[in-house]
Length: 223
Image (cartoon, rainbow, N blue to C red):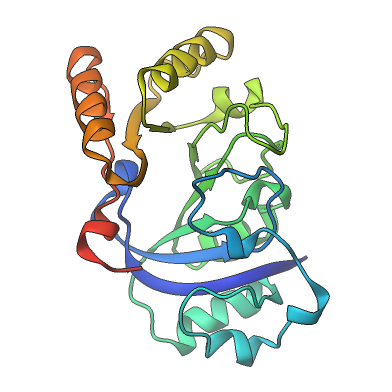
């Protein structure tokens, strides 16, 4: 199994349940969902002319649209070559659920890593039983994809971006139509750190005993 990889880097997880945890991010290329506020739009398309080698990918600095096809074993080798010390791996994108992640999970979990996927919930999940699933539901996006009930049911965490009350209302409807497990964590994440959105998220989290996700990495100005 070969995976289209946009970048691999080590940092601090800035969102959701694992906020503050050292993490290796594996960012996959490709996403048709089309969120207008997406801060990784360079990962949407897999243009053949932007395909590079594993060596070129390893030397990338900053967010660019170049990508490389890597196997699970090569990904693990890159972790070791770059002397990453984090044991938590975040598989993100793009939309990582477009791909069968079970071969990657098998290699990395056998090597002692804990895995987390961040997904929009619009593609069927092909993940290991141990993988932490963070579903960030994307509703009424330009791509026209629907959030899948099976993704909501598998989610360990629902992490939802909000800016206005209508987003809270949309989440409420989704939770009614596609109920998650009773032990799933629900996190609200203010879009773009807007003060009004942050205030709304804080108040709603207090009222409902939900969790606030503030995108710590953006406040710290790290990747």
